[in-house]
Length: 124
Length: 112
Image 1 (cartoon, rainbow over the protein chains, first blue to last red):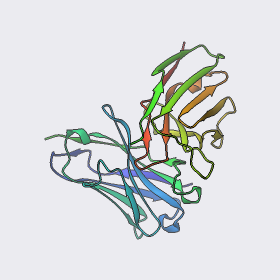
Image 2 (cartoon, helix red, strand yellow):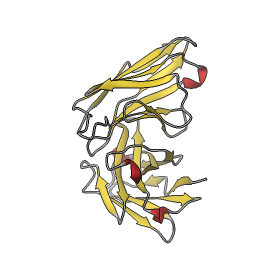
Image 3 (cartoon, rainbow over the protein chains, first blue to last red):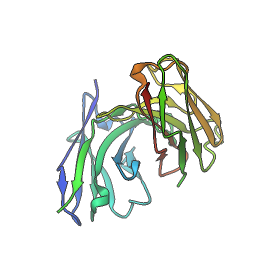
Image 4 (cartoon, helix red, strand yellow):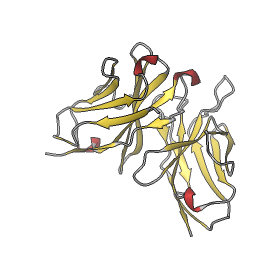
């Protein structure tokens, strides 16, 4: 049974970089079969799609975050990562990783598996 | 960005009664491939959202048939034919026509 698990610091200082990983267990991230995605949820902005990575490292990012975000895959460790630079209090949120089957096409948001989420607070 | 607007924002329903949630998009979600890229998710407290309906009207595995999605273009509806206690939570619509994907504000459903 495939599972996703987010991990990373729960507290990040303003202007620093938020770094999270999503470990895939019970299956291989290298199958090329999924869009690996980050989504966050805050009280102020609700659910916000951050971006995704698929195929040979192709990424799509939310334009509002594009200058600050990087999503990458580590096939050796079977995980994918999120880096968000120059964080502010507005980046405080629960961060979820999720997957959608690549076979459903570029337009899919068929997120059939999610991590439990991890709360990241930006504060000094 | 495509703006998704849900109504109502909260709903209190007697068990066994129907419920309906509206979602409107600022642009058409009908693609030239014939699919409408509108999704419905349900989130319970302390849990991630889970998929209920994909591409307008297709129920995800294990979703009871009391849930149905409908609509066209920019106006969509999620209906619950007979609400049960386990249906409480926040329902979100989501569009997948453009990047960034965007969600509605959510509709909180509770039981009377």
